[in-house]
Length: 77
Image (cartoon, rainbow, N blue to C red; front, side, top):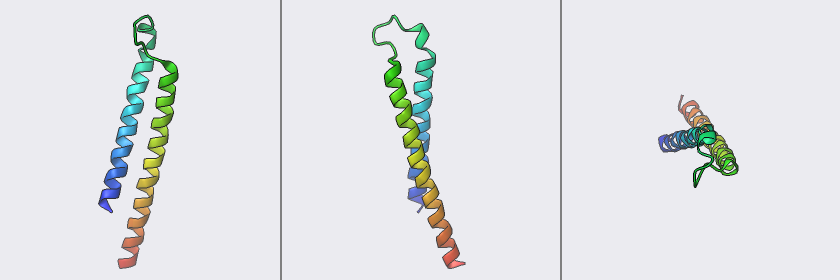
């Protein structure tokens, strides 16, 4: 059970970090438009949507693990 919570929490952290990294690249966008390999806003939008979806999925994992743990505790109480 603890492994499920740990996995879900790690997924939440990873998704949050990815979203923050993308947001930082978008925030710097105006200054690096003329540079080769400059930030592609379309790509960043996709990355942000993916990060949000991964966050949502991992939040569901954490909620499900919490519910299972609650059921397990109720069973033995």
